[in-house]
Image (cartoon, rainbow, N blue to C red):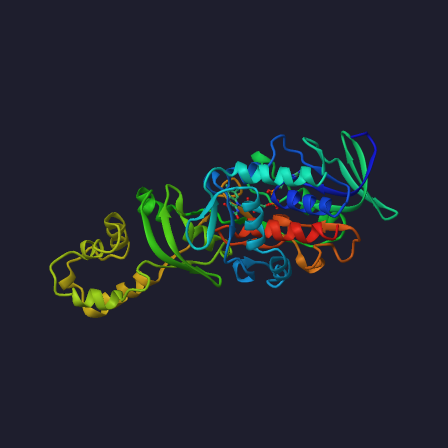
Length: 393
Ligand SMILES: Cc1cc2nc3c(=O)[nH]c(=O)nc-3n(C[C@H](O)[C@H](O)[C@H](O)COP(=O)(O)OP(=O)(O)OC[C@H]3O[C@@H](n4cnc5c(N)ncnc54)[C@H](O)[C@@H]3O)c2cc1C
């Protein structure tokens, strides 16, 4: 590419959303340039889903996303659905399977998804600058000028697809938020989501050596409720149930953990109430025994069952169904899967992803304040929002 270049669309960020958008715009005959600063393409896709990329969820719908504006994602998700992406995956001969709960993974490697997106961009005639940093973005006379060390590019449309803040070592930057602010768009404060949570020192002293123990639990907080595995770690709690609820945690409130979901603990304990067995041994029939020991010690209940009055057994049963844990924090952006918050959707069109007040400026993917649950929902948002912008940029 020459030092001073003109095209129709510049897309900054060649991740999931950026490549999807560039290919779609290119197919419409638009001259598209993709700018990516990281030297390796699609790193976040490559490491996703344990290397197999959970690329969509067949059940994806607006209820699976968090946003200050929960209806924003509805239009894009309905116009480019999981079926549409699966059809593309199948056209490229990528074998896949459903693991659980509608989550689709590659049979082979996430690299196949990166290669598919690259091929779609190439077929659509997309141009590349990679690796290439962006020095500045300006708008004059209805034209966007993107300045880079490899020269400036002028374009009628500018698409920001630079993602969130997670895993900075593979390219994450706050670039997209800065551009939003530069052009007067509001940004919902970003914070780590789908992230392990940490214990306060007292809980760490009690439960920290349970690292590796997992429990099928129902965890609720801030309007979210998930039944999946909860995993003890050296620092606190993780596992799918905790990652999911972390997106709903406000940094202060307690999580409520039902350790025996769908089971009547009161009836069970009262029936066993005449036994000489210690409560932790009884609980060990349904919960990991090391956890049962620690939990009973914390509740001052390492006691033979027959010494516990029925009222106390009922209290303990209630506590098993509602174990309250206040995390001390999260493991932060290095361990989070996504960033919650981002460019405020109230300034964007849900049909085109364009900024209402800034002609020709689009935001797609994770940089936008739309955050999916764990399980393929975040990639589906990247595909759907990228496709939406690709039809209008
Ligand atoms: C470990 C891990 C596993 C995950 N697994 C899954 C999963 O299995 N399923 C799922 O749905 N989601 C998963 N996610 C989330 C998913 O990867 C993201 O939501 C998705 O990649 C967001 O797509 P995006 O295109 O918006 O951003 P990204 O894919 O992050 O792409 C943004 C791109 O912009 C580039 N960029 C940033 N700043 C600049 C700049 N200043 N100039 C130029 N380029 C820039 C970055 O280098 C990057 O290439 C996972 C995330 C992580 C961290």
